[in-house]
Amino acid sequence: MVKFKKENRKSQTIDRKEAIEQNLDLFRVYAKSVQLPFILVWAKNQDEATDWAQQQPVDEWYEHETRPHFLEDFKAEKIKNVNKIVSEKKKLPKAGA
Image 1 (cartoon, rainbow, N blue to C red):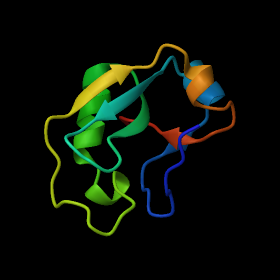
Image 2 (cartoon, helix red, strand yellow):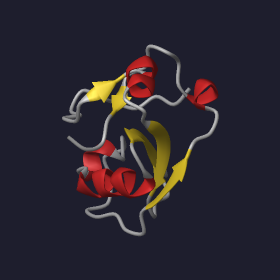
Image 3 (cartoon, rainbow, N blue to C red):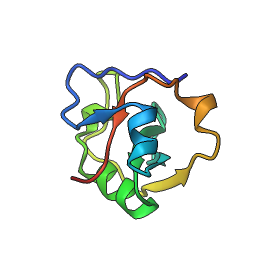
């Protein structure tokens, strides 16, 4: 399982059951980086996942104090076997309204 610092995260978070009920897929969104190269988000499609990721502050992507001031080249990848990545009760951010 992937663990992120979530104390400062402002996005709504939902667990796997809620995401399935809302017909959402899990996406791993990459950005050009050398520290934490991805962030997980529930979204309806790849564009929504990428748009959401682009709006997140750099603090959401990096735990280390030497984080960059910007990110670029965002790419979202749909995760097919969600059960291996996220436990049923694990809360992750939800893109969109």
